[in-house]
Image (cartoon, rainbow, N blue to C red; front, side, top):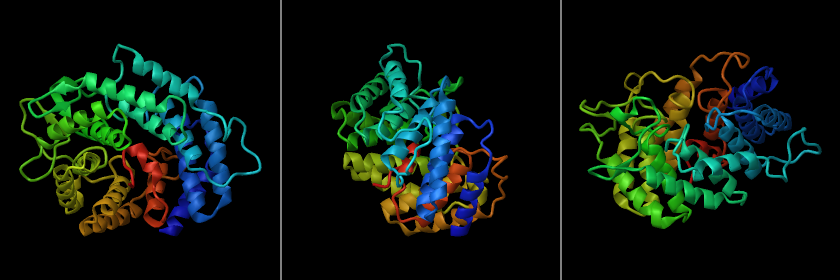
Length: 377
């Protein structure tokens, strides 16, 4: 495992960044920072800073605000590296500063979009307000200007966009056909909103709004449990629900993580117990029923291995540890293209795979997992 991690990190560090996007460069920088620290390879940390500086330069003029392919994602990576710094170097690459607020401009754009009365962004994690909130949670670690106030404002917008249902509340997804279904996933749906609200409740942000909203959203999500104990990825109008693939982005594992966060934040046993049951059932699923995952984090073996590992740390259920090891081993044996042809990002690329490998062998808390609405505490 250690050798596989070192080989991947060195290969990525030596690869030509070419025309890589700002997000790919920033994500690769995060991976190399963590890999360099674990492997005690200072040249990897140096390359991490160089890629971060390139990312800042290439992000200039980028119009997107996505967490995984836009300005918000680049800003998150920079804030994460500042909040969890590696040993300082005598010199810093051009465009990089440890002491300034390099993501202030992105913060101001997010602030403008949040206070805008026209809801141009969905609630979701990948392209919506929850993703903006994940950036502000990272900025909050450094006591950045207005981050706590902006998080409260995002909670206000989530409350305003919530749709009342028989069991509680949910949110409309961003997809063009979203009027026909309820998205239950972490990446684009209500599980992601729940995981985010649970973090706000834990931090004591706008509790008069976040606590009741989290309670109602958790009740609605729980109402979609299937007879076999699992959850669908989407609930369609007028169509019977079906079990989802096994992945971080959709299905039982992401739902379990969201319900666990809700239960612990609300100090309620029922969501937490449901989360454990769903996670343990998910651990028993084989490769075929999981939907033949690829190697990446979003819907692949890296995301499964890491999420099972984290849930075992939180829930202390032994089947989760066994599943984490099984999916880690499966991912190690999957073929991947070389770094000069593979995507570099955390969501579906080498950075996400590498970070999951770091987490599997490092004693350090995987704070980077906040990008995926997963926290080790």
